[in-house]
Length: 467
Image (cartoon, rainbow, N blue to C red; front, side, top):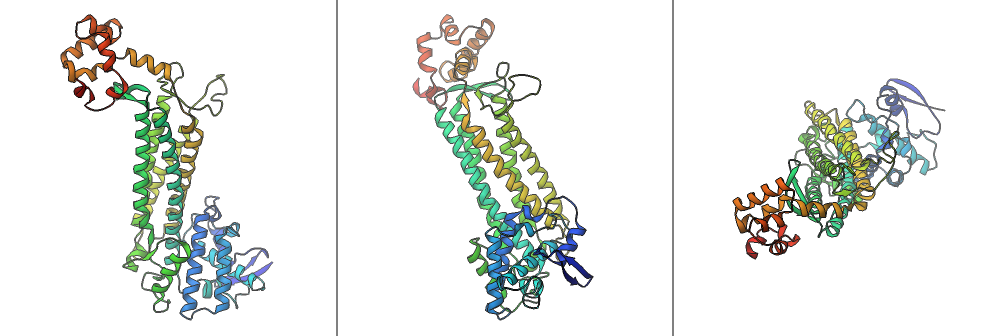
């Protein structure tokens, strides 16, 4: 064991721990969720980029030696590569505006840097967590900067998952392009369309979400690095902001830039509310698509059953052979969670006071969950559901042949009144509309057959032109 001390007194630290006294106190103080920062790898990577950029800026401005800078940089590279993430043991929800996470990062990086120098952990006279790793910084600029960068990383992952899901819908749209079906409004039969058009609409909805998310991602690039405690830059060397921000962009690949007003950027968490709103929008639309897939596949004998979803698992412990739409169901649940997270993020942003928001840890955790879970849910919807959907060709064909909704397409040719008379007779007798039209002397069954084809039924104005 090793002894470390802060101004509250001494603390015994396990010898193999890279964290120190400040982290130990945080572990005692915040036994809240059972989830540690180790479960937020994007945030750890972001902190490593922040600390590495700060070390380079401090060296350039004379605040760190070459040896300290190189050792700190090597330690940060280890974190970026995924090492030592298990050493981030503080709870994701914590008091102190993220101070515990920042201290955890400082201690892990300091002790790893000392190890690279061949020194024992705790030799803080050589590399100190606060004096060196945290030089020219405060939790109040490093934590929000790291959260924004972690959110940027998470957004890129979600964008990739959305693009793959869109591709799956587009592939199905092409496959189902010639398949006629009945479109529905308010759960009632409406007018003909193709199954391909229905899936093309799903793809378009996802593409629109991609566009909105990509645009909003750049809100995460305006940072307050160099503002230190409240945005005034106290304890940072002159010119630090102009050095550290470009260095951070260079090292991380994230196009960060300094906020125009560092005091405002330190206290204002509105950008997180905005990005959470976009995620809520995505969730609402993906949940709607999942609802549609469940409805369209309902049955398989007594439901809509336009399509069949791939069978993924047994659906009941009591009803043999029952298969449930479990993949759309899990997407629904993730979407509900994201909408709830948005409420938590909104309240956390509203609760900030004066020059700081103390509730950014909850914002960070909620955003992490929303991004990670949406990404994973999109992937499973794509792979375990959409790619295996098949059309119920026989049933769709029967419904089209017998559907009175086809008369809507005849309005431009024969007028509303004649079309209505065909519909009324078809409903009353159960006969096909082509036979009813012939019986009423409106047109022959052959003429009707030429009109009621997919290309004309599903293209606006085509019937009028054909007449």
